Image 1 (cartoon, rainbow, N blue to C red):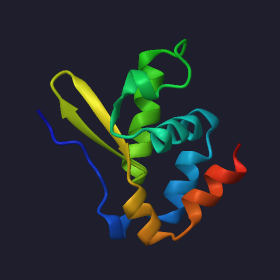
Image 2: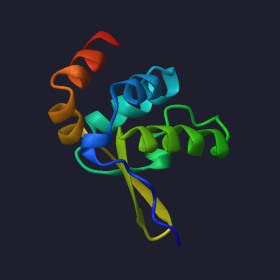
Image 3: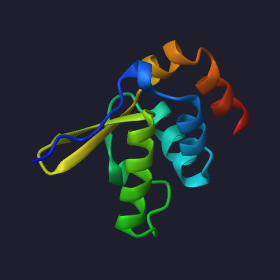
Image 4: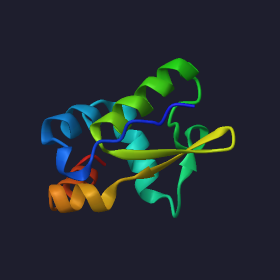
Length: 103
């Protein structure tokens, strides 16, 4: 099985992060992950259960490749966590501000 791509913390770009979370469905996923105590699977993080699985997979891929989330395989599930530490160290206060004004 191929490893999932996650950019190194220093390679996370502001443009990629803003583009990834600028889409309403992806922003809703980030909000759910921010509120979770631990990693959650794609089904639990999905804000719209009526969206096609392929569409949701694409949203998670965009977030992962932008450096917003970390996805790990656990059995047959993909467990997602917000890369808050990496984002806060790279862009202090950005995520908090976005989540606060996006309500």
